[in-house]
Image 1 (cartoon, rainbow, N blue to C red):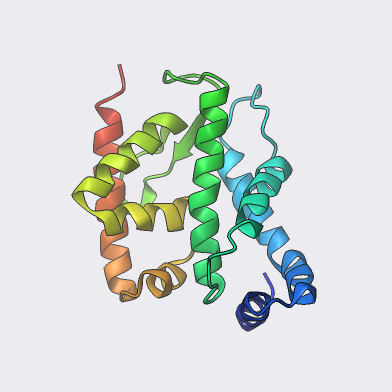
Image 2 (tube, rainbow, N blue to C red):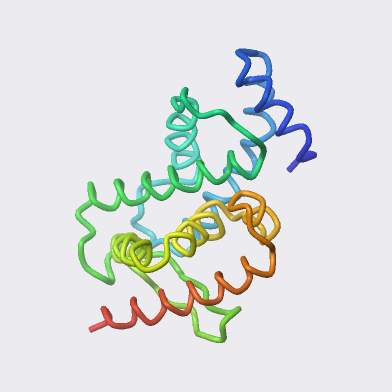
Amino acid sequence: MRDDIDVTALLLAWNDGDEAAHSRLVDVVYDELRRVARWHLRGEGAGHSLAPTALVHETYLKLVDQRRVRWQNRAHFFGVASRLMRRVLVDHARSRGAVKRGSDQTIVLDGVEVGIPPLDVDILALDAALDRLATVDGRQSRLVELRFFAGLTVEEAALTLDIAPITVKRDWALARAWLFRELQRQVP
């Protein structure tokens, strides 16, 4: 990814109606969005029909349609992208009829940081678990979206959520442990 200041400057210029800034922004963020998409789709089954490029395009089309958003910085942009990417993945899974664990719509939830093994999870089960986590702790649910779906670093997530990096690390460990426990309950 190019310099973070460039992304923030381009976002602010795009907010002010500069379409040339929007075009440059596409060039700057496209590779990063593809990296995140590839990361999400790495654990998908061979029959999965959504390629990283298609995921990026669907997400980006939704991003540019966000006319009411006043972009603040790179972290804010990727925070919104994370939520939209989650929606695209969940919508795709629903349209494919992936309603049970073990279908070709699984993703790998890596639990290395909290000492738990990776878990293959149905994207719909993860979405439902994140919704349940949001009722328990909305910030932790949002943090999972930022870290898992957008691939933000601890520092970027801290900036987006306006909390200290140490709080992000603590919440990240707690959220992942909570999700692991919650998703293990659904394993037959």
